[in-house]
Amino acid sequence: MINYLSKMRSSILLACVLFLATNCTNEGPTAEPIRGHDVQGALKRARALCNQNSMVWLSDMLRKAEEDRTSMTHKGNYIGIVSLIKYQGQRVVYTNFGLGSGGIAFYLFDCNGNPVNCEVNDEAGKLPNLAETKEAVIYSSLGL
Figure 1 (cartoon, one colour):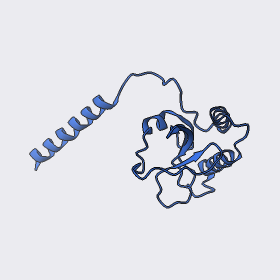
Figure 2 (tube, rainbow, N blue to C red; figure 1 turned 90 degrees about the horizontal axis):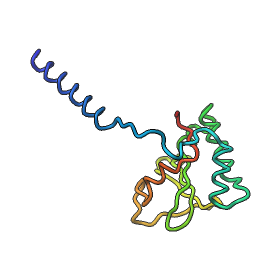
Figure 3 (cartoon, rainbow, N blue to C red; figure 1 turned 180 degrees about the horizontal axis):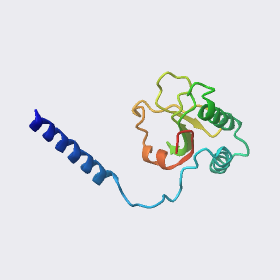
Figure 4 (spheres, one colour; figure 1 turned 90 degrees about the vertical axis):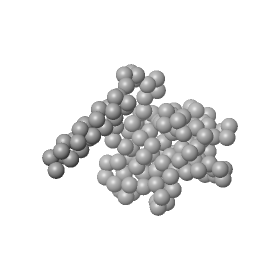
């Protein structure tokens, strides 16, 4: 029994060392940091990238996200991120907010707030620009 526990402890220690060795990097700050809870900054960036004077629909969504972040007013349906990405050649707003869906992985909206449907071969969470999605975050209601 003692030999088994010793081997188990050694295995766990080795796994931890390997995890830390492969996941710790010293890459420095990213060029475009996540703006976190800055609703006005997110709206300003979205309006600029979408070439829009107003995005009331996005403002409402971000207001609800802040309400969820601080007091769970909307039962967590607005917890997550908002990114601006290109999908099929057009600028779209990506969010992984639940929005009361019961399990849809993400939503895409055009700059006017209209839903954008994904192609059949785009599996949930596997957008062509998923890496860009994470890098292009303009708002997050998650803990930073």
